Length: 461
Image 1 (cartoon, helix red, strand yellow):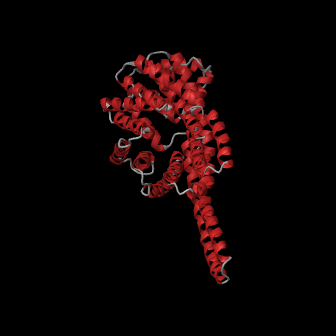
Image 2: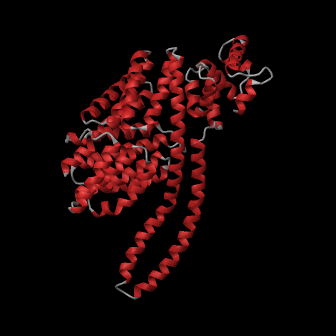
Image 3: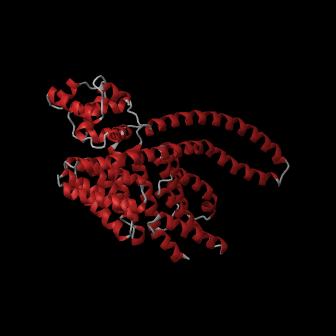
């Protein structure tokens, strides 16, 4: 049975792995094999997380929490709580993520075996680094992000058992990204190669793909576009095999940009359209998942309260005197519970508003300022950045005119931001006549009438 568990763990196809896990769970329950059951329950939770079902992962961790805690296996309890923290993090509930991480670290400190202890702490440090880096409510602190990333990589390097060194590839990948963002390409390349090699040894399909994206970005920065294209296409194939929607989206975005650099407008447009479609799909899924998770945040205290009441009932059965104490306690708890529900309803409304702003296809004042600065500095990354925040707008234009060029779409993007012809010409260092000619071509491709105003139409699209 343990050998079948290892096979399920090694399968990269989520559907096949899920079927095998469910079958093995029936066997372990039938044979009362506790450790095997706990391993499989956690593997099932990991499978849900890896396919982007973060809300389902959170619900599942609560569903199996009692079984995992009763096992007394500290590495497994720490893993469960870290997985919950990772899911909260992926849905932007950073305070809930940090709460789960704090409890995960409490159980990690109880682990006796060095390799298991190093593995658990590496995972916790990694998630702390991600929380510092992804929480846009707080000022970005690169020192904290790098500190915890290096700390995680260092402690993972102490692990002796090769089968437990899979966290090393994740940490190497994270460090590669950090160095890449800081324009230290040599260090970034070194860590991406470590990540890819380590992931390949243990068949970590997802990390192999992400590492290829990192290596492709380095090649693109070095203007080796053919090599970058090779890495991006390989990463896209890898992401499709693993059915990882977020990675597929990222690959389409990178491929659209690099084909544009290479002057291949047809392929650039194809990947832009695919990027827009999958962005819309992920946004809708995340919006639904975040709504469910906001409810989980509110109901979490109810779950904890329910467990507490069950314990109280066992005590009451042994003593009548305890009954009066319990009644008093319940009155107090109900009052506190009502206050908590009211507080969390307000918190839910705020979270839902923030999440709606996050997934909606609109430009906030903060993003608008960022894009306007990019226009004024004639930043070549402007169009790619604009697409990231406004993919549906680009999709609508390309649907109306499939043969429209990236240069035309860039003009449309600037008009969408409210810039006039003179401003576009000035900031792009072009002549007024050149910009007017482009606008004329766009009007023609969109079948505009002579009396229609292009800028007004684009702003209202």
